[in-house]
Image 1 (cartoon, helix red, strand yellow):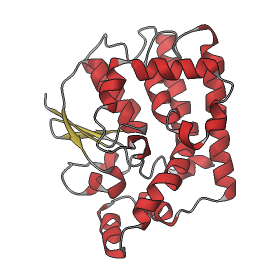
Image 2 (tube, rainbow, N blue to C red):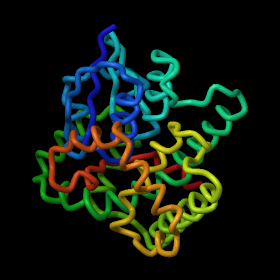
Image 3 (cartoon, one colour):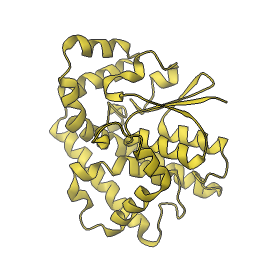
Image 4 (cartoon, one colour):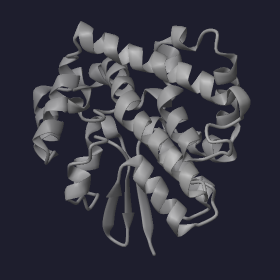
Length: 259
């Protein structure tokens, strides 16, 4: 089995997948790409229909024996299946369901808000600096029409007051839920699991943009420190190629999740 992981800066879904890989103990050839500059679509990755139309948007891609796998939680589950006992998912059936339900909440409710705020603050200026020809070349390489539209909206900085408020509210909701969840435990599921990685990857970057969401939450602060201290997370963060790797977002989860 030959695995190649194409990943962005260690933030959001790329951080989840990198840390999950290192937790699993599996080997993969790591290929860093600039997701915000459209390098996922530059032709080097053998994308399939699932990757082209991924609901996660511009996330990492794992290529296994020539087949592309996408979406951070599902890639991490693949690692857990290939390396059973890595601890990414609980063995108990109910706890495994509970963990996957938590991850789904994180992906479907929290991640779109985080992505909207992060892209408006950090990705829009990068895309706005491109000339029309360079940006057009990125759009032409993207198969999914709705994803092309998200790229255009990101470049324009299109984020209504209502959308911004809803995005911020979801970050506040997530930090409160985490503070309450870990009242009697160190980790979200009791033991360390993928739920901790996925939650950290999306929530940690918001400390810079929405510091008020973290005020008065000592258990959350301690949990953030515990996750950051994991060897797998430290190693993932060492894959950074820029001074501000937490800013390395690209158009993310599909906007129709806001319905």
